[in-house]
Length: 165
Length: 165
DNA sequence: TCGAGATTGTTCGGATGCGAATAATCTCAG
DNA sequence: CTGAGATTATTCGCATCCGAACAATCTCGA
Image 1: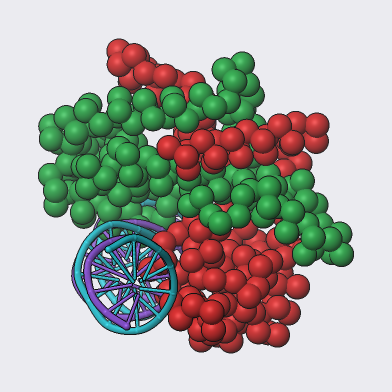
Image 2: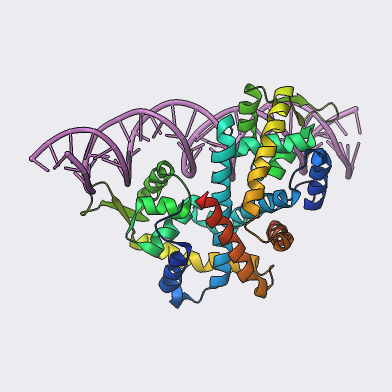
């Protein structure tokens, strides 16, 4: 990242290039900066925390959700993580192959599959997540502590509204 | 998305499950809601605006950046879009094959490749982007207008800090 | 001038990522 | 009881997506 143009330069070029089109530039700034921020944070966390364990972002999210909710149904992992069931199947194969989690059929409903961490997977998350959270703390600290709640609330509102559309 | 658990339920379960670990839950809320929001908005825009044109998110970003800056060097597209050069090569092949853009070697520097939109690509963006922006406007409107600037500023700060790390 | 080092886009291998189709299982009206 | 419809995880085909290796090109000090 950290392109040749600064954020300010980019936004100036955008408004110059599109000024005849009668667009909502404020809204454009909100969403484009939302994606920039998410992408930058994700890349940073992959590089500083996840790379050492050979985990992709998605693999980490799957382990995280399972860590919190285990035993958990696969459809819920996909929901919480924000990716498709088809994607999840592949990632579960990878993580099961590495011995971090197990799948078992539900006794109550034969269509469902329940996922749990192995001891190895739980140990991995016990070691990894505190380090992950340290980075989260550093990143969040660029927002005044008194504004962090407002910031998270705005993000929650965007999510809730968009998913309801 | 819109999982079985509400955002509130999830955050309660997380703090219960991890309360013995001495973590920064405020920071966790900021980053996890950043990813939820970005993912939700991206899915929504893909479904409501991009699907009709058969464009992936990344393909749209490539077209958008090229639209603003053409002629543009490929390395800058990757920078602005937040993905790797390897990814870009594949997407450029797809979009060039569909006739939306062209590649040409730079005369000044034989290593560089310059990308420009074709008339077809420019026409596509002229029709597509106003619709895209309408959705951006709806989404951003969940934040009070007077807070939108603050919101975008916070996101910019997160990006700038994280990329500098 | 020249060549070691830096930079760039592509290729390669492997892991996501998704929509559509599929098989297994469950539900529930009749 | 039963079978049509709903729900679930997987499979399939294809399009991203990335790090590492690579070839082409440029830079710049000696």
